[in-house]
Structures are given as structure tokens and as C-alpha cells.
Length: 144
Image (cartoon, rainbow, N blue to C red):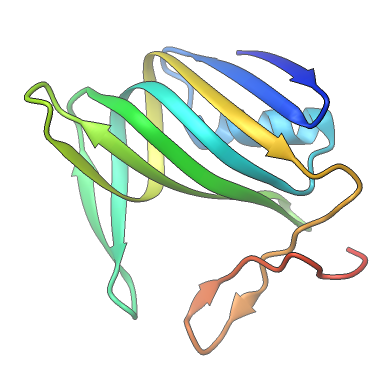
């Protein structure tokens, strides 16, 4: 993996076989990122789990064949155990059909490129929202 930072932008180049979440988490830890938006991502994914929230749980579709990563968006917040990464992705198959959803797991194939927009000096939280049964983004959690 390669990373470069210019101002509040961080660009990542991920390599074949890397876990997408682990790589983004590593970059966040190394650069002290506690608040960021994942503004774009492209490349190739060889394995992924996409989820659809039913209101109670995620219905998961396992993708075990290579797909183009044609879109990636999300956020990074800070938890005691480290970066909390929430991603949604759009994946295209060899027939140019696109599927998407909440990204639960992904392994890079060939290469991946991810751009982060950081919020220096800020910390985002991700507390559990009991009424939804999900952790939701808190843009102003106070001192963490």
C-alpha cells in the first residue's frame, strides 16, 4: 500500500490481496485520522460481502468472483478499539451489471485506489443507536 497526504486529502493505493477495511484502518491509524469521509474508490475486488439492511439485520450477498469497484463512499469515525469504517460500494460484473450496498468485507484484486477527505482536529463517533439497532455517525461526540 502507498499513501500520500496533501492538506486534508489522503490518497491510498491498495495492492492485490489486501483487505480493504484493514488497509483503510491502517492508513487512519498511521495518520491519526479520527474523522474522515471516504469520498471515492475504484479498482477491482475479488471477494466481497454486500449487505442490505432490512430494519433488523443485514441480508448478505457473497461475491466470490472478480468485480470492478466502480464506486466507494463512506465515513471513518473513532472508537476505543480503533477506526470505525462504514462503507457502501458499487460493483460491476463482466457484463457491466452493477450491484451495490453496504460493504461488509472486501479483498482487493489487482489494485484499488481510495480517496479520503479528513477533518483535522475533529473526532467523529459511532455510538449504538438502540432504536435502529445500528451504530450511527456522531459528528460532535465531545472528547473521546
